[in-house]
Length: 394
Ligand SMILES: *Cc1c(COP(=O)(O)O)cnc(C)c1O
Image (cartoon, rainbow, N blue to C red; front, side):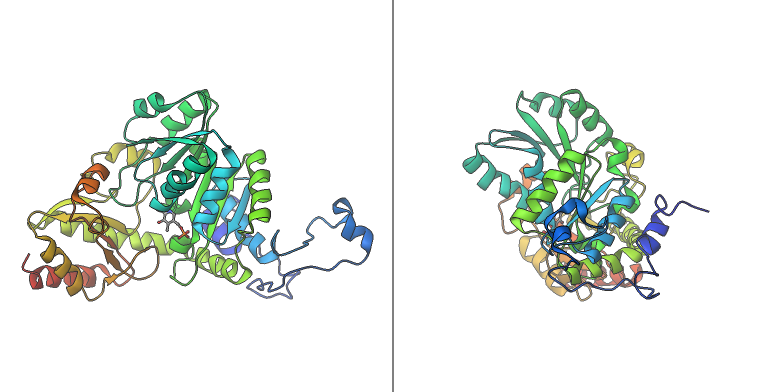
């Protein structure tokens, strides 16, 4: 019998089932309540007198939320999990749990833009922190960036535009030597394809708005860690800043997680077919997909992630801005929109709102097109890409 605290499929389907507690219902209920009441005032006034699984107030914790936290923690091989109202609530809380005024942060330059925006527009000017951005593709860069006051290294592997990866084991070994905490955004791989804590990372973050939720119907976030001090600080900050997820959303994340394994494996299969078709298409230049054997970091990828999911980017060899925009407008199944990780296919041109120089800095061309391969079937997605290329005269 597999250990249901260690086996991803058993964790996703059954961890947290307590039939005797919930009248034998196959699905745990949604606890839509803001507070819990007590039998006597002594219990209410003194935490130590409360039952071990007691709850107090909904900004602190909630039984439905707690099941999701246990599931994500178990899948990430972590001791503790915390659920948040968004990925950004999770990310900012994690940063504040480790850093203080004056801290120095090392961050992968193509990390999620709202997080780098938080660092640049708030942590640096308001809290006197400093930051060094690195490409993330070689270890020496990280080593060179370390300062006496470096408290945190922020990773996102792969990054969700140009899909480069960082040497996670190498970075965490270096960080431990210098007593620096490490954080990774694991939203792209999900715990099905990458286990950062096993590679020495201190904090794993997820946006549950992407694959964990999986149905484009919620916003949510998660942290997982085995570091008790970080967990306590993050719990305190969540209570104070009020960033906990709502019970309805927590329940929907739980529902999403039950099928996470089958969904991401199907996204992976479809995306690999699409990426391979793109790579072989004479009109297409570069394809950025960590699942391709031609990826420049293929060996490193194979050593730290067991799969890639549905998101990728590509560039045409020779297409004007007008043609690229027409191509996007002509797509029928791929809808124009931000985000990814749901059942549906999406497309955007992340660099057109910015400048060609900014694109070059990020390591891509201005005309880069990002697609999320949903669950509509590889043949349908390829046919859609093909007809849109023809319609745009590419
Ligand atoms: C969407 C996203 C986030 C932010 O998550 P929200 O739930 O939207 O706050 C963080 N990291 C990555 C990689 C994302 O794609």
